Image (cartoon, rainbow, N blue to C red; front, side):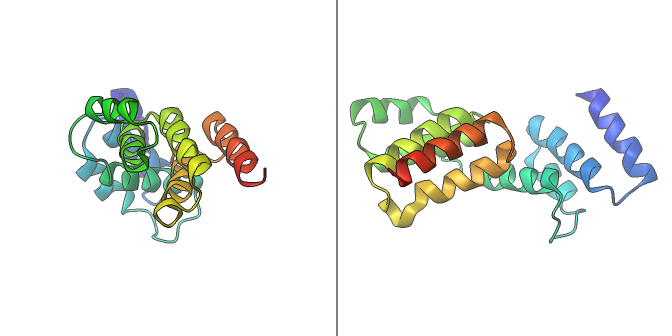
Amino acid sequence: MGGAAQAFAHVLSIEPENEKAIAGMARVYLAGGDREQALQTIAMAPQDSKEPAVQSVRAQLALSANAPAGGSAELEAKVAADPNDCQARFDLAEAQSAAGDFKGAVDNLLHIVKADREWNDQAARKQLLTIFEAAGLTSDVSRDGRRRLSSILFS
């Protein structure tokens, strides 16, 4: 990770407004567990940035802000005990997405959408959209998740 940070820092020393480098540096901080520094770094990008890398990092930061306290083991046990507990499943999906397990989060959110599309004012569907953005709109997780979501919504 040190090499990536150095490369992004070098680009930013030459082009301080390079949005891809800003996003890359923020992603390095986020991966290193320094959420505050990631927030400060991504704030260097324009608020209305259309750069996909900036939007992805902002979505990841939003997901990590909503993560429930504690680990996911307790939430996994709650879901195993009652697979139809939408709130427990949603909380587990939030914990998974904050930890970078986008595939697991998508699986749990799709389970909620399939069981009850309108649950909690469509919170699961809305969270899916944030995860797709965080994972990258062209990522395998996003493509597969969008396909599965469409299958549920339009069946």
